[in-house]
Length: 190
Image 1: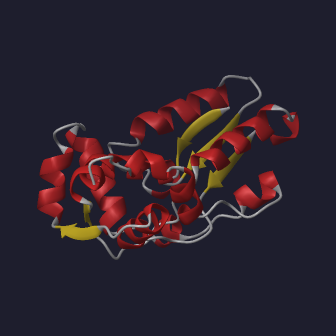
Image 2 (image 1 turned 45 degrees about the horizontal axis):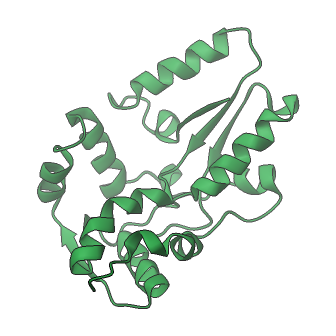
């Protein structure tokens, strides 16, 4: 079983996702029983905002009103456990998303509700976001990420049925993830 990225299928020409495509291809040629889980963006990417939420009650992110169906990492784990226990999933690729597109602004609102405190949202320009991301990510990954966040394809905004097929239930919502992880955003000083 390989955890890959939705972008391998939606942006096969992207330099940032070519290594994952090569890994997927190698696994498919291996002769082994394989399953690929291609995930959308993870709800846990919001942990990147923890410091600014703790210190300033602020989230700064680009494309505040562009929604993507981010997936709860708990659903990824449960999906992985499901496919690892059953060879009937061999040779299949599943795309795992959340239940609905959610914007960074709505994610901020969900975290604020989980904390019971207001959080201010600041919409960064693409250039501002790129400069910040280049501090900790390689340039091709930054450019690939910003392309998805700012100009997602229809396929990247679509809710996949695969979480429901694998788990027999609706994928977890971002607001539920925020409630379970609210402690990461709390600060004793505020």
